[in-house]
Every structure is written in structure tokens, then in C-alpha cells.
Length: 95
Image 1 (tube, one colour):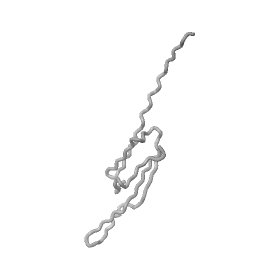
Image 2 (image 1 turned 90 degrees about the vertical axis):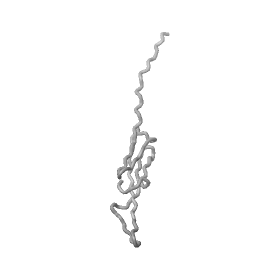
Image 3 (image 1 turned 45 degrees about the vertical axis):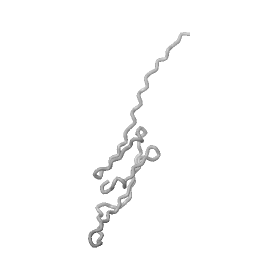
């Protein structure tokens, strides 16, 4: 996500299993001496949105997102596996 600030990017979880990443790239305008405007357009100005379906074993409460040096890293941890059920012994009574 080069050229974007962290407040320009939205990361949301919708419908309990859809990760939605959206944002808008804004135009950078600089005003120099003498009232002359220079427009710096290294990348396109546009909105973007991507949706990803998450698996059922994700822990949605602890999803984290970090944007560093133009790279957005989203961490979605898995829920721990449930412990396997142990066989239960049933006592046989003589009656």
C-alpha cells in the first residue's frame, strides 16, 4: 500500500467470516513559492476494496493489521484445536 497512510486504510470483518480491506488513495498537492501549485502523481488516485472469506477456525477477536514501509500485514490467528474426547468408561452393574 505504498503512498497510503494508516488512516486511509480500513480493515473490517463482516458477516462473521468476511475480511474487507478498503481505502482511498488521495492526491498530494504541494504549493511552492509564488503560489505555483505542483501536483505529485506517482500513483493513481482511486478507491480500492478487496474481500476475503476467512475459514471457520479463525479467532476474529484478535485480528491485527500493521502497515509498515508500504506493506500491509494482517494477522488472523487460528483458534486452538479442541482437545480430543477421551473414551468414557461405563460401569457395568450386575442386577
